[in-house]
Image (tube, rainbow, N blue to C red):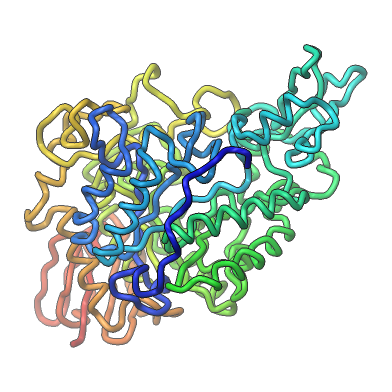
Length: 561
């Protein structure tokens, strides 16, 4: 890149990377996702920042998580909330500076927390120096080869080069105005027009990202979450798909622009770089694939360490469906020796407290608040089920407070680019991105001193950290207790199997050594054996005569020790 950057601090040793090194920590880690613009605002401008995150690190340590994953904070025009990167080696001024990033990493390590940063290798911003020069230099510019520029079809090139559709709606191609003022070539963007896709067949792209990896590894980060990890390689010749409403096919078929086998060679090269560094650092794939078996290909021993389990995230609160996806996940990961991952919410989907408040089958972006009491009860039960499963778990900021989605944001405050484009994603991701509440009062309930970039509901005062801290039975204290038990119980955490126990219809029961988890997904109370001493429960249970009465939508943890 042509832009100059401050030198990164010298690489750190394994001892300095984390306070208490633990080999293969990622196999049973609980990783907390921070969405920087919505976590904590240190300067009162209504937007979260790195210094705000830094001041709240003790909260995350006390919550009991192992690592913090930060969504993008790179220099960006913010056309897609930072997933349109203009400079991969700079911090956007809205979030702070490289010095702030360095201080955050150092403080996290001092508290025993690891830091995972987002990496966006599928596309850049249209304000990236490469792309700006590619457009300015016109047809034939070597820089155009680093993206997917193509002549249009039709008599005068007025039609897109193929029939691919953007995930955000509309064609996946935009035509540029050439330096002489005429309409010219088209460029590919699987997301917003401000996010042109890199051409990973060009060696300069691979060279650049290997350099970017080293830059942040030298800064001391403990790993990377790879955005659109399944999208880097496109099918040769960019063939037509031959159908419309392509976004509805995602996750069901291997597409010519997603989940191509060529991505795996890229990740094998990256893994060799990561393995040069001390400190047990990791890669995490955001890979939407048709099956968990194809997801497993990303986490073979010489590739990435983890991959998000989107099949689990999109499963309804139903015992049969949950058992099926749990079994498929464990079976798929076992041959490649990778840990299963479990996740219920993130920055792209409706929070699970709201998804579970609505009837099943509505997808992962929902516009209805539903039955909030029911949604919270199910969300708490789903959390205990998730944390009892073998492998690694992800927690999205605010879910430990039981936050619902904000489904009634006024149109004029929305910022999700998909909201402004037709026929793509529903465009309601803003609802899960509303800044979280820390206190009962204040212009933004403790988020900052100057309001928040998205409006917060008044009822969030009672869901704030201040309102729940130390309150028995609160969702915050449930999470803290669950993470403490998970860390200390010898049969929880890493593993690759569960022993299913006989249970009433609609109930999941499994054993892991001396530990037993029972999850009642039905709307009625059920009676199960008392499998031992009750460790933790998401709702009130009754024990008598060697049996346990488990209320509807409740999960119970037992131990025989």
